[in-house]
Length: 217
Image (cartoon, rainbow, N blue to C red; front, side, top):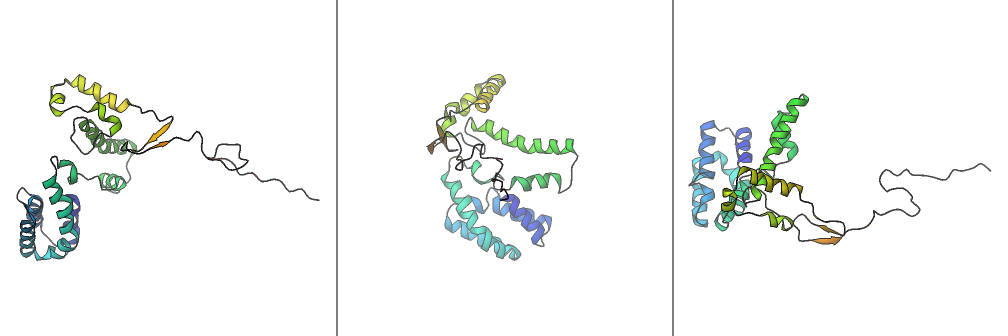
């Protein structure tokens, strides 16, 4: 959300760098709008921001205000671990993130692989952090047996941490008879084979369509 607001002010509004910095501080700072104590405080700070920077009023009131209140301010007040709620960029298309990394320009293969690795590395870091309940990811019910409290995680040696992390990556769930949803709450029977058309002898994918030849009478 921070990135989206910054991009909009930079590309759509005639604001100086200093003004953008002050607005971001008023929005997301320690005493900003997102940390308001209640609805009255939230509305008061919002009104002060619009009076201070009238050029942002239309964008803030129509597109940003409700999102900040319902998806940032309220969750921050109701969650014991709010870091994972909104400060990440998971809503951004991965394709767009690759374009940003490459600056919309063709890359030679070694440089492209390096940039892809740097982007995906963040996801693996979050997977590792999910083991002790931090980061942007949470362990599903199928992986809850690997959960370790932050205190116990801190007492482990680097070798022990790597060993546990590799166990999570190598873990395979038994799906020969049942199929589980990503959150582990939905379970359905696994079909033995894919559907086939009547008279089809080959596997459904890439099966050639055959027609009976017509013979001249």
